[in-house]
Length: 424
Image: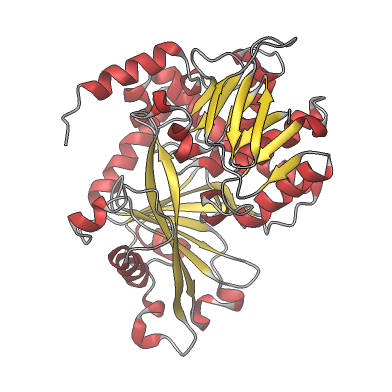
């Protein structure tokens, strides 16, 4: 069997396969391997936020990289939102995409002060804030519907049904000739015989071996399975989401038109998005919460996405009900309230940006992984950017921030930093 394999597809895989075909690669030359069912991972299970960071992360990215790169990261996320919006409209993708706005709701004075300093620093560096609106006090509470809001920021963002988007992209790839195999994990990638195209790679699967000159690793949190050299650099973590059926106070004409992030701190926040199609509210879980035990927090460090954590569930729902009193338990009727919870595995990196580009020391292998739970705001530029490189372009042609590149220098720097961390 020969072809150009993309291992274990997520949205980035499907976007890449479509872009490869549009770039001139015959669909019949593309093989997509999925370890489980089609569209079954975190790319289809996430909350669907196409929510660019408008300014908040600037200070963090500046400290981790530099001012220029921080500006580019923020600008790229804004570009992704417009890219998704344009793509969905151009192709009429049935994925419940809702171009709207998002609110950053500050619930503590500490975080309100942090954001105030962040936007000032972003502006001083030349960042564009023309699309950002600020509300304080009563105006913030009225705009967001959150009685405890101290202030809020609003900017353009969107939401989508991620499974529908992923499935549409996959269907398009198959329709254009790509081969797709479910329950067919890539178990190893080893050097094969040299061919007319140069070095060949042997991709082992339970169904046989694929010999190819090009391998694209888009397994995100699971990238280290085939790329052990990234073992300290891409860390799997379990994220959790919840479906909540609202009462009449948040139904019909009262639905939340905007998405939002209910923020107590940098890691203590909860995402909220209400589907415009059926009114279901999707609640995210905090990365860190004082209401969650250390044991529950440590449970995040896993690749098991078949279960959810009750503490995390209760904390997420309690915070939402605290912010929206109409959803308190005693005000809910039969059939309203929490319906179910689920999890997905995200890939975290030490410097909070993905690894895009050539696999160091393995010509013909490429990687697109480590989206830090923020892939919906990055993949629609990262995947096409990687394809440009695969088809012969330079990093400059990708239009991506340089700090995204999986360069030898970046990898060595991060490995040295990881070696200095205390061992648990």
